[in-house]
Image 1 (cartoon, rainbow, N blue to C red):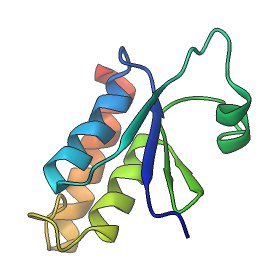
Image 2: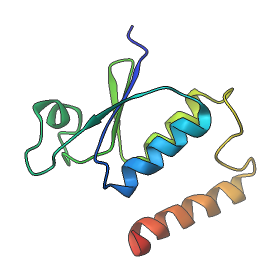
Image 3: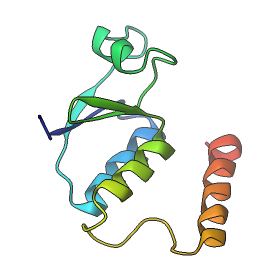
Image 4: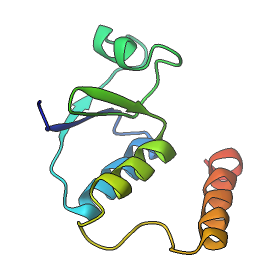
Length: 108
């Protein structure tokens, strides 16, 4: 199985940068693939047929969409690489998810 990590994104997207920073914090090398959302590639549409948006992380040939889900996947998959992104206690994780959602909805 191809274990390389690829990220389809746009340099202007704050959601892409969340994923890129997470991979860098964990020390996971990845290939960046710039997408043009005004002319979506067939690869992007195959990997994210529901929304056709970036970012999309591809690991082992399997795509993962939505930056928050991607960040959790990275944290769980490379748990032995650096500090965990999420706090250990369930309440604290719930609060982190709340503020992430708040930032998505209100700030970004």
